[in-house]
Length: 307
Image (cartoon, rainbow, N blue to C red; front, side, top):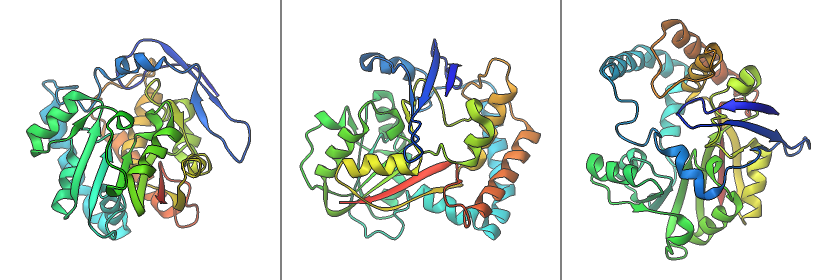
């Protein structure tokens, strides 16, 4: 499908190719050849979960500009329904689920779990990045788990809900990990996954410059059919599969940056660009309107499963 792509977002050496299943009922995309599993940690040495990643003299200005962007856009988001979609995405679509014990796989710095704790959930999380776990403790007072879920030996049927936000695309064995999650969930428990959506209009427009590709960290890229099949093979029932435009402004703004850069690189915090920001904001509203007629057009895929 694509050949010779660099690591666009963070400094990882090498060029990467991606293949796609030709069967229309599948469409799975994967990095080919896949990095050796024992080497995967190299691709995360400057990842955004590290609290000092991308820190420089311009960070304060960028933070201020982003706060201004949110303040300016919120009234229109509230009118159009984007604000509600963002709030639902922020809670991983668990806003109407009865509170219980929640496990976040790939919990990063704990921001999501801190929010869900405030919403009444008993929270737990695991991540292979020790710096992210330390950041969660420093920022939010959360004591989370460092390591691999498969070797953590957590008790069976001990969680009411499990979330995976932009995790499944990083896994060498998605079916295997979801099988372990099924073991950990109580009967009737819920699994919610979000991941870049290859069927979305952003990928259709930007192709190899689409923000969701991110080689070599993203080993598999999914559409609704392929991720639903992964869930079913792990023993889940798919309760709902669709997409969201909640983060479309981020996806599209970054995709414009990648397409406009001759080296196809962006860095952790690109230089602010008003025109690019306006185009991304307009795109988000357009995509949000389209979702009512084309539920698979959003930048992020959402698959909700039950045990």
